[in-house]
Image (cartoon, rainbow, N blue to C red; front, top):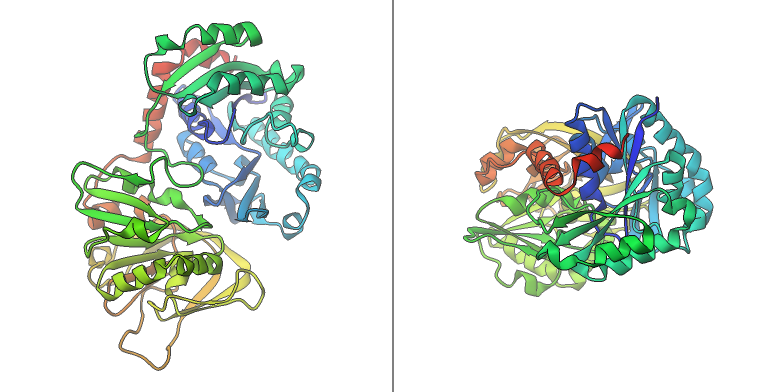
Length: 488
């Protein structure tokens, strides 16, 4: 038998599709079923490295977490098509884990039929191996300008004959209009697959919703099957962009961590854990004003970037580079990860037109050259002796992943040696001689419990506990008869 398929559709982006799909993955897995997630096409610069046949490849972070929630090994079939935005009108296309230059250069409307056989084959393969497949849609299924080329919403639902839940964010307002309007634009064949409406992020007394759910059912024939209260502390990273709050703060803060939020920043989900650590305030810094309270005890993090040279220019245009340099020169702690590491170096070379050439911030004596081939691999590494103030990292082993075109080496710059860069992991991590500036190619450092214990004295919630919390929350607010009925 092929796996039963449950699909989560949304009235908008950010309605809660990824959250609900992850919760469903863990709930069905706890019933003793073999569960796999699936999203035909994901557009995100938050990616993870997973097994891809005899190599490794990229999938969206949301499907990576959903696989872990489902107690399954993440693999590329779970997100066969990943679009990584490089600017407003262009994305790098990753098909079955690997960059596909031909598809990247193919107009969007001509791309769908080329990729559909791969998408449907990936879904078929998962359905042959698992009992339940939890499918996540993208954006809204009612974008009528895109329906003819749809490969991620209702085409997938019809192909899999999936039982669909439609979720909306009631906190934004207009929830019932969103639900009715989306349903109305789907057409009869697609409407027949909708099994229930879900109101997400509700604040207030559910009794105040009456008589709207009843009126909505009169119009559509579909029940509102769940009202999910606003819950900010669930611990699951957002699929895209920064988290709900620009600044996350606790009652008593001893350190602020500023993450430079340049336009093409990537893999932000790796910092989600920092929002849960007592005494830490996390700030997404876009303007010089955002760093007006920067103190000597605070950190500045330069995260990954899909376009390092472009984001470096943005930092300079915003005068944020001057704040970073001043903080570093005064002994403040600065951490660069992947693209952020490249920015900390002296120079970026781009002979193949991959990313763009530029002069770096000059805090590490490194040179990066962008190559045509892309490094995509999981990683287990161990720091050597690390100088203060990052000394707590000394000799720590950790797991993570690499995704980058740049290749970086140490260089002598202008004959200066007093600030020479020291290698802390061969080819992966470097530190300046003063010790306060550290660059690392590996994503996921703060997802290692031993790192959090050593560096931030935090021994908190595990991912498994987060996933179980999502499933518990679902049980409280959605009838078991509905959940069972979706796969019967």
